Image 1 (cartoon, rainbow over the protein chains, first blue to last red):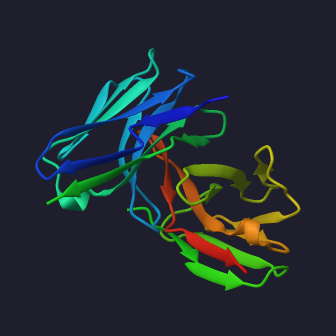
Image 2: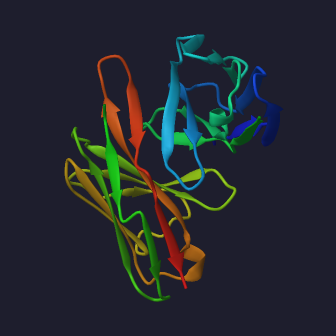
Length: 112
Length: 117
């Protein structure tokens, strides 16, 4: 059974700092991995999708990497802003019906 | 872009009543939709996979007779929480699966917050 873990569980940083969020998964036979953002009481916003054959994806200040063999992904946020404050979730698609297994999430707070 | 809506956005009901939540794909067709549940401070847990025109597939531990899923069209799936109890209070989120040429992904609805008194 696929298990997805994210560390840290919570993170507070000053504005402008670069930061890294970590995601690890136990079954490396994944189809793809996705990073989401969730604001309090809201649904999910997809940030980046990395196919199993890819090593990284970039969108603006966000960069996600994938090391499938070691079961790890990182989300790098450059020059953080207060508007980045949210919970970040990673999810892996292990195939077999496109089911997503979500990580435990990292609650990020960027302070002025 | 692909938009998924949910209705209602929040609902408060008395214990023992049934609550229906709708999930719609607004600008695309989805043969597969997923239903997730999220308890406070926890991540999303997949409840069931809803396939248009066929019975839903439930995850282990999810009671199919309590959480009725109907996927009658390519743009609408409904989740009915029957005889709701306070422990069913949660944030319910649906997603619609999209299979594009370059990749497959899911688009998520904004969620429905259910509070059972």
